[in-house]
Length: 264
Ligand SMILES: Nc1ncnc2c1ncn2[C@@H]1O[C@H](COP(=O)(O)OP(=O)(O)O)[C@@H](O)[C@H]1O
Ligand SMILES: [Mg+2]
Image 1: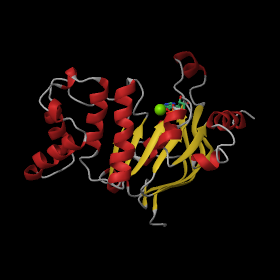
Image 2: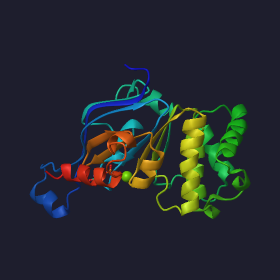
Image 3: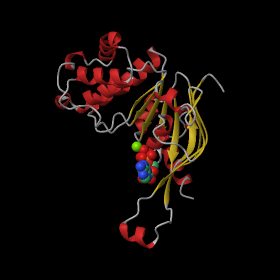
Image 4: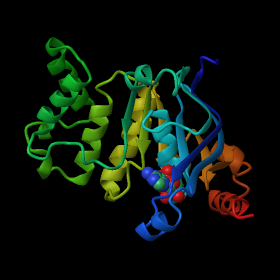
């Protein structure tokens, strides 16, 4: 196992069962229809890089992050996070990664930002004596100090996203998975999030950020390397410079070609 790799996947496949309507369930109770979310993903992400997984809706981005976070198990293939196997070491992985996925229904609306983080600090088994210090530290890092005593339901979308990062950072993880972190943010809030991920977490702190996005410009500007995914397969991977042939072609064209490749 290469110690410089933050994640590695080999032939990763994930199918989801398709939920049948009642009629079909009655007619064909044992037929097993399924959607293929990941169709054989081979990927390596280096430690300390800002890695953008770029692809359209339904490409498999969230599923891949869920496999790394051990929220779903693959049907075939292997996935390792910091050298740990998602199937065998799921507990260790969960205790050693941060992840902020886009559906944020997990904060308590009536509690303040601080109370929410203290709750999650307790869930993450951070000793009581260290909780306040840790919570203060992540609040400072995400620049949420002014909002600590406000209730979550008064937070803007941008502040909610930053709080999700703060929670992800409660665990002192080398790698952070973020799923479309700027979706539905206004331009200024989006810029704040992008800079936080790239400048603070990657450049300053040397962490690995695994960043799923459908925004081409975002990937182009912030990704140290980009993988373009479509229909559960990685179509191309590399630095922007390599993918665009040193700027000979635009990333838009590379993206369009990668999408076509998937349709044959
Ligand atoms: N829980 C689920 N049950 C059934 N199908 C799912 C489920 N989650 C995702 N899918 C399907 O898997 C494919 C990939 O989805 P997803 O990983 O969410 O893609 P992305 O995040 O790139 O939009 C899509 O076709 C989607 O409909
Ligand atoms: Mg998604």
